[in-house]
Picture (cartoon, rainbow, N blue to C red):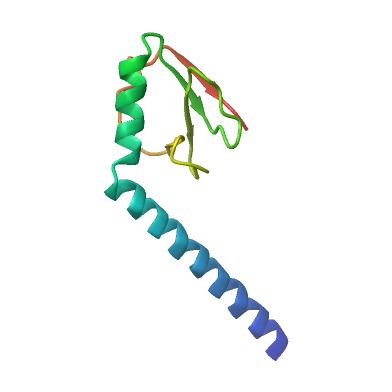
Length: 98
């Protein structure tokens, strides 16, 4: 019984550590305006606007690559279930990766 309780507490602890890291990462991204800068520069440079949702590590040139957990500051943080930072009508094409 004690071993089971220890395993459960360890998983909860590791989950809290992961959540803390993600919150800290997002706070830093927001503080530096990373996502708004990515959007502004992409829209300024591309007349044909294409959004790649859920890109993971698959970066496509000429696409606005996005993921819910971006691996770098070149990828837009975008939760497809939340309100977007920009109007969808400003985009022409979409690609959803799984």
